[in-house]
Image (cartoon, rainbow, N blue to C red; front, side, top):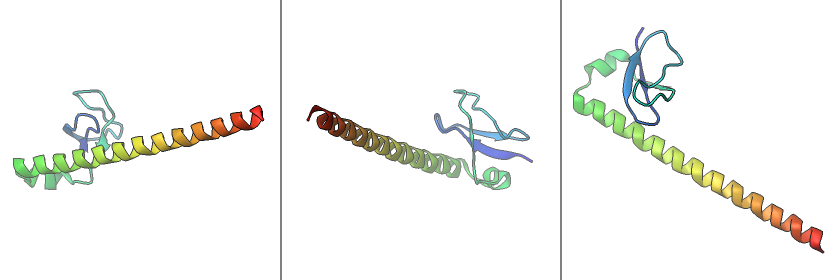
Length: 91
């Protein structure tokens, strides 16, 4: 059974069968399995496929920004904790 995969880095789409750990042929990243069925993908127009790709790209960019912001907040909290513990040691 063919499945539709999309690259989280370069957003290329690949049809794959029997490879749950498929990699992108363009950049080498591990592909994400799409919820899109093969038959549905094949019935899409080129514009619909491009729209699907753009929506995925937008979700991935939003996810990565949220992840980066969360990591920055965690690092700030860790730095504040370190500063507090250093101040306590100095007293």
